[in-house]
Image 1 (tube, rainbow, N blue to C red):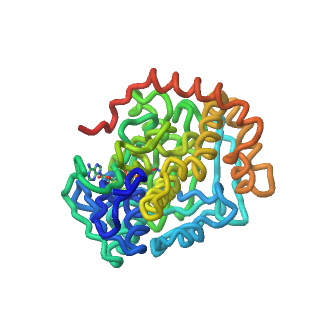
Image 2: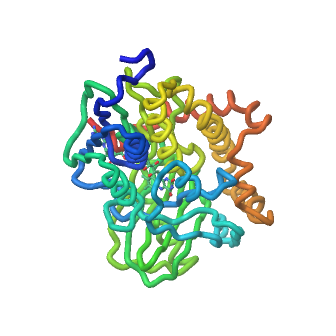
Image 3: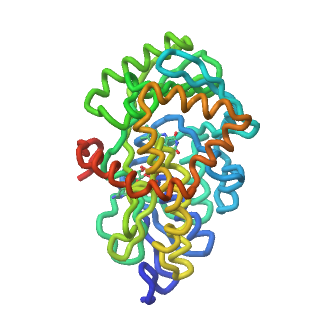
Amino acid sequence: MSEFPGVSASGEIVEIAGAGPAGLAAAITLARAGRRVVVHEMHNEVGHRFGGDFQGLENWSSETDVLAVLREQGLATDFTALPCHEGTAFDCTGKRYRIESDAPLFYLVERGPGPQTLDSALLRQARALGVEVRFNSRLRRPDGEAILAAGPRAADAIAVGYHFDTDMANGYWVICDDELAPQGYAYLLVMNGRGTVKSCMFAGLKQQKIYVQRTVEAFQRLVGLEMKNPLPHGGGANFRIPASAYSGPHPQVGEQAGFQDTLWGFGMRLAISSGVLAAQSLLNGEDYDRLWQRALKPQMETAVVNRALYSLLGNRGYGWFLNWITSHSDPRRQLGHHYHSSWLKRLLRPWARRRFESRRRRRNHEYLRRS
Ligand SMILES: Cc1cc2nc3c(=O)[nH]c(=O)nc-3n(C[C@H](O)[C@H](O)[C@H](O)COP(=O)(O)OP(=O)(O)OC[C@H]3O[C@@H](n4cnc5c(N)ncnc54)[C@H](O)[C@@H]3O)c2cc1C
């Protein structure tokens, strides 16, 4: 064994628990470097908990386009990614805010086992590199080298609503209104004849049915939402900045480590980046904690401050916020600043952490808890 945590002589198989974006990104990085990798996925397919969900691969936290970032990380981008330059937001009065950015604000991607999804693209790449993916296989206690990428352990926020077929044109719409999505936002995403409508709520989780119903009604009223064959769908997100992301000798990545965007739940990029970093730590004998703390922690800490500030806004403040974002010539750049650390946000960190931690303690964490 090496003196470094989680590192042993090369040639040994590295086991990975979970074939989500974090686990597959780790597998690809290891396999590209010539390591033998087995990924265990407890379901019979990738992206089982999302099954045809649409999600935004955010493009504002880095100057470089996110697809270029993924390629720089050695990851395939042969999934359908709809560039979203224009969209519409509403405040609680129904006032419309047009969002327009030169570069895409985010890319709409599909999750789940379908041929064009992000999950399937990563799976294809992993297999092409010789990674063995074992479905219906739950990894409990790994013996040798392993990376733990099993997804969220609890729900600090949830996004619930429907998947559906539709004749609506492609696009995205957001409503910031605590009557629809307490301390979060309601959203509608449509891509190529299918869509998802959700209430993404950070409080009031137990009243989710009411909020979903109000969300659907609001989008019907404001943008003429048409749903055919609606299927309920939802899931939780777990936010945590751990002191260490090791579990014993094994790096934890993605949402298993609690790595998420505490402001709005855009966790895919953090999941992928942490997977790549954990793999690099095994390959290079570096301390994984040092790697993620340098690359990801400042952004996650800023997100906690942003969350604390956002949850203070309330319905009046959301209108001000939307105005602030959309009145700038480039909302993408504006959001980018918002996501990056500044002296003021560093100053607010202790207050934000206390506020966020106490909110978490009050919350029911049972949703999606696994045995
Ligand atoms: C409804 C919803 C909407 C979202 N929208 C967005 C969005 O628009 N943009 C964005 O960036 N993020 C979004 N997110 C968050 C994003 O989906 C997650 O941050 C991301 O999927 C985390 O990736 P992961 O690999 O850590 O975990 P997961 O994607 O959850 O993958 C974990 C995998 O591990 C498997 N597993 C669990 N335990 C074991 C075990 N013991 N052995 C083997 N396999 C196991 C699971 O079956 C699963 O396949 C959303 C989340 C939800 C719930």
